[in-house]
Length: 123
Image (cartoon, rainbow, N blue to C red; front, side, top):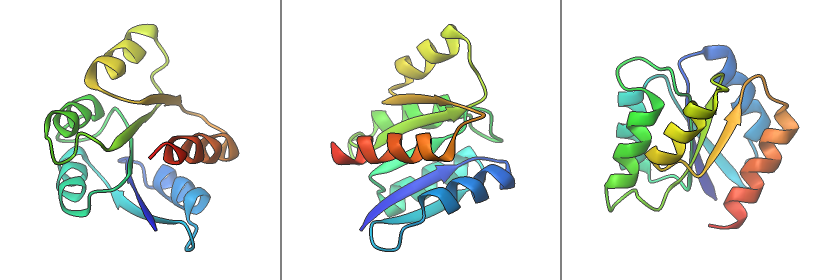
């Protein structure tokens, strides 16, 4: 059973993504509402994948990603930035933060599920 941590401050996005990914035979979906909670949960739960919104309270997704990738206990965790930011400099910032993928909102739930499955197939 693989763990996926979703960090997004919008309840509607958390609900949509959790419903899209929830598969009791394959995945457990963990939910965080802000950057601090995402870091704490990632350290405790050690998920295989983290989906990070960029704009969140306390710590933004870029900062959370940098901290995860800088810590030897969590550096292996795959990170997908899930954001409404579409500019090239935002993609570059995500890459420089250590993100493995960049997925923009609004998104197709099926396209997101496919991306998640592709990433987790590499774990």
